[in-house]
Image (cartoon, rainbow, N blue to C red; front, top):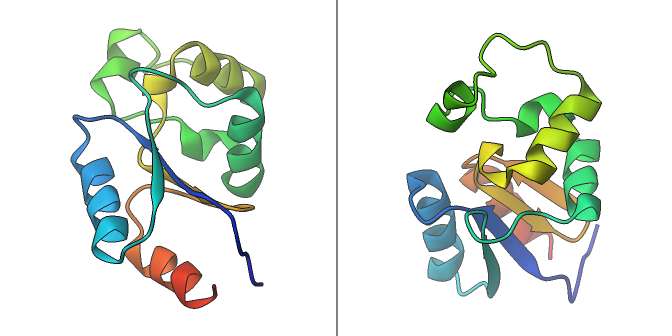
Length: 121
């Protein structure tokens, strides 16, 4: 599946070490990136739904984060609509990094997957 002209996007936060590693991965390979700091701006509803369509809503929610626990969500039973609403309200609840390229997306640090995407260009 060739994808040309699609921008690479990395969503994360400045404090997230996994996001910084993802940014470094692409920069070392000369891949131009659009970096989005989730502390400043969240994903659009369309971007969020696109990623959720690939991975599911549950995978997007960082249940291990301090932010998740501090919001009192640790024992909550959350359905897809609840998770979508939470992530649109507070994008820092997203598991990061989220990498998007065309219709593809990944959650977390996945250099082997990204390398396979680069090789398929």
